[in-house]
Amino acid sequence: MLKLSGLLRKMIYVGCLSFLISILLFNNGSAYAATNQTFIRENVYTFMQSPEKIAALKKGIEVMKSRSDTDPTSWTYQANIHGTDDRRTLPAWNTCQHGSFFFPSWHRMYLYYFEKILRKASGDTNLTLPYWNYSDSQAQRSLPQPFRSPADNSNPLYVSQRDVGINNGNALPTRDVNYNLAFQSTNFLSPSLSGQSFAGQEVSTPTHFRSPHGRLERLPHDQVHVDVGGVDANGASGWMSNPNTAALDPIFWLHHANIDRLWESWLKLGDGRADPVNDSDWMNTTFSFFDENGQQVQLSGKDIINTVEQLNYRYDDASSSPQASVRTQPTDNASSPPEAVVKTQLIEPMSVNNKQDSIELSDVPMTVRVPLEKTESSEDTLITEPTTKPFFIKVEGVEYDPNNLVPYEIYINLPQGATPDTESFYYVGKLALFAYPQGSDFSIEITDIVQELQRRQLITDDTISVTFMPPRQIPASRTMEEAIPQLQGKIRFRQVTITRD
Image (cartoon, rainbow, N blue to C red; front, top):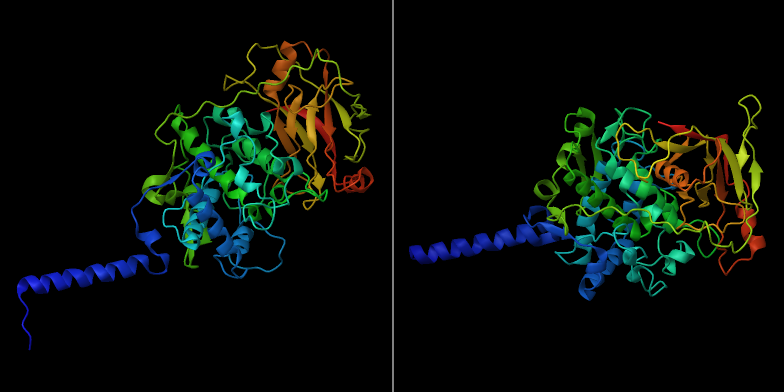
């Protein structure tokens, strides 16, 4: 029998051990779970400067799309975890959390496992999800170029089921991406049935859709979903407008990476801002997902508090102070001559005993006059004191077609004859019913707009006019006669009120 020297035996042992470790770590992509590497999620406008990174992102999506929809690591299965109209009941489908304090934590878990699946599918062990920072730079408010060009099936980042203008490079409205109101909240959660907090109302059990939505979810989350979904080339609402189709659009994942980043930025502001670590429901409620090997896994709030130590990722601006939120800087159209007269259907205030059963939106702009509780005018256009009671437009008892969610714009005190402009100080936002239960109340905060209009002496009596403006861009592929029937009766509600919570 051949005798080996001690040194030779040690060399063979070390070599074999290294070989076994390399097999365990890198076979079937399990390196991703074993590594201590901290992955850096980049701004997509930085990310897309690297052709190699864009190529890896595209390849990962292509591979996921090539898999069966019953494969938990496929594109369709992962999208269906968020929501789907498919009546099959596969594990983890239709489990996204909206309208409660589970909203940010559930989506962080969801992105974490999706990113691991995407990374393995791409073959690039360093691939991370980029984020779309649409709030802090006017130049980055347009859909990133790789997601809209080439505009055909050769590009896995492109989908035609998006707003025509967005796919053509139109910028998101300034107000729709403004996170000031969310960041002014120092409380993570609020009591049941209150959306007056950063993350949303406290609940004891998960619910797929719930209202009201918290401040971060209302703005910018919901608004960006509806902006990007918009009206597509066929005159229908795009995928991002509907929670049951939203995650089929590749930009969904970058949008939610940014929402996750804003959560981190909010925490860095301090002054009492903190995760609800003393709330046992938030900390211990478990949610199911699938990892990169197709194995079902579970996470809870306590597992995802520290993205670096627990999840091995951070954002590329993690070492800097939170970026300043964007102030709405509207165009002052008060003195500009109108380009066209906007004729609206006017509904006067009605007493509770005399109100009609429902108000129905259509192809004609509709204006509802709503009583306003007077307040003193302020030079400051933002809420600065936590005791200030904010103003809300509340659209009560909303019924809508989730598969054709018309993105009506909302304006207050829009002058007769003024051209609607989403960059004006009359613009409130979209009627963004993303993930709202049927028959619930939609609320949108207007405190800063009311204060600005009061400062300009553009609120002069005890009512405010609320105008719902239908889409004004009809896709070139459709005539007005073809598009109008799709608007009739798609959204109806009981009444509009202005409340102070």
